[in-house]
Image 1: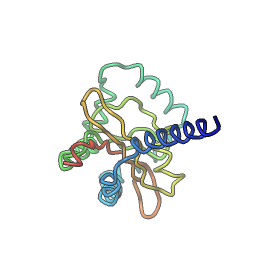
Image 2: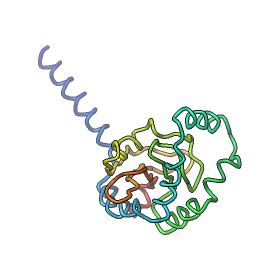
Image 3: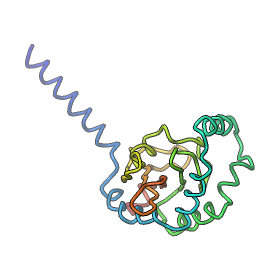
Image 4: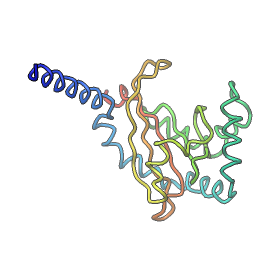
Length: 185
């Protein structure tokens, strides 16, 4: 009886560990970290984030905009402004040069959107791991999220976030959505 329980426990642990590893980003994603981190010091991106940070928005204002964002089901003008700005156009050019990328978006030092290629679900991302782990209280770090299957594109994707840096300090975050299938081709 004890042997059966022990074998079942080991089997559950083995299966659970296998599932956890299946969600982990493959090594090819981590191999990109240097290339993607270099984009975090791109002058167009840095200047846009500095300008947004200089506005000194209160978190309550950001959260009110997030509420409006989440309750807008089409792509409204205030959303399009983030895609058609100088930063949005620059991000599109970066996306086109990275065949494995499906979206790129940039956040300020509080996790509010500054620019994006395609609409994302929230305006405020400051409460999410893709922002918190990469911004790291201004220290900056590369963060690779879990791999998820995207039913819309029928592809496995993984977010990779890197700090936007001004000198040695993180002033924001840029997130790349990586199509794992394209990366591994």
